Length: 314
Ligand code: NAP
Image 1 (cartoon, rainbow, N blue to C red):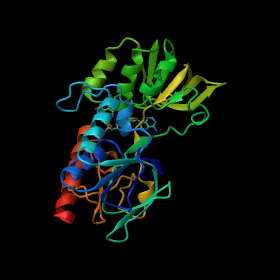
Image 2: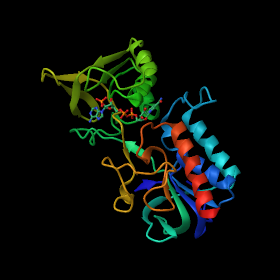
Image 3: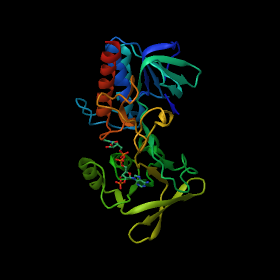
Image 4: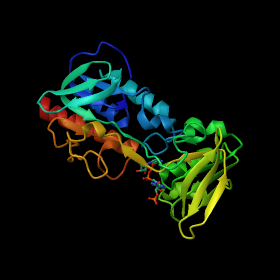
């Protein structure tokens, strides 16, 4: 189940239902609208999906630097300009068994459509260690741009070694006294440019070959217990917060048993972004693929909507 924004006047039928309002979904809506199709985007409580959590986006071609929420808002307005409607609701079930697909919302609405484009994205992966749930919102966070300001001048830890982890560490380094990056190997997965930036920041320190075993505190996070994988030694790090940036898991549970998913739960598609069910497409981070970026999600949305327009409404 996931949250997906908007206005009432939802009709019973649209040519295209887009589930999820991230860059893939909004691009699909833009292309569907330009193809003359009626389209509704069922979106979350805020526009833009994961872009909302990005302080700065600097790898979308043609836009050297932009705030994530600003790009999200621009994409929404662009889709609306071509007729796409937006509605805030949670999709609780889908029925892809017939030619007419049905999308069932938590507000009781059931929308029929010839085509469904799934762009439900992905959520933060959990560490699953003692203290993670207990201290969530009390020092444990999955979003530096959302919560970093609570830790101004303090010492925090951050776990992960990918692009998200380095982007978050760099953001935090400008706010907090010190960032301890805890990584389970001795090499980062993040792209070179982000690694180099992180290594050059004097207040970003690295705790290599280490895994988080426990998060401790009273009212709030006070200590993170890490274990060195090589020596087995356990150390308590005294920090005010722990940011968790260890990857993503696809928001695909409601499609299980209805669509072909890969071993990690991502939706499998062909090169037109169509799933094993005709008329049902998947785009963006929820799709089984290599590179998960705003630019790839947007491109996939365009491919899916254009293929759907030609194939089912041509
Ligand atoms: P990711 O690339 O999958 O990296 C996850 C990191 O967390 C890896 O370093 C991994 O360690 C570590 N990890 C995974 N499970 C763990 C666990 N249970 N305990 C400890 N560490 C764990 O995920 P991501 O950084 O969120 O990025 C997701 C996608 O979004 C990627 O395709 C990325 O390129 C993209 N992205 C791009 C940008 C950008 O271009 N600026 C920014 C953010 C995200 P190992 O390295 O040992 O596997």
